[in-house]
Length: 131
Image 1: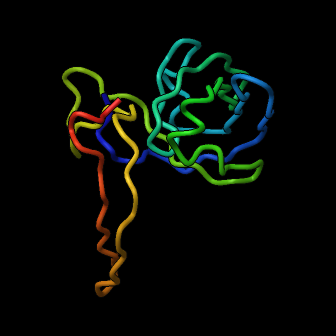
Image 2 (image 1 turned 90 degrees about the horizontal axis):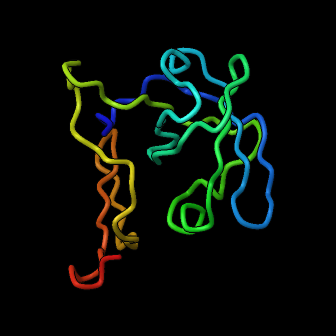
């Protein structure tokens, strides 16, 4: 469970494209506390499991379904990524509850600039078609 509040901007240090799961290594600072092997971390909003920690580097395996259903397939070494640790029971919420798991893949139907922001229309699958 996450709040959707980004704790820091990390950097992709290594991306190993291989058959099956890709290897992703991200450099962080603030999110290192409590991010040991087996911990969850949201990387660009996607819940990933730490498979290795080496100093300021956190490594993850990113499976084919995650690559297909998220924008993580678009990152490269040097790319900035949003990092957030999971919500701890009893901690201030500060945002909203976000799972970090994909329930469906939608399509952007429209994008309308509005002052200093953008309004987007997203088309989602019918409820019976959700994975």
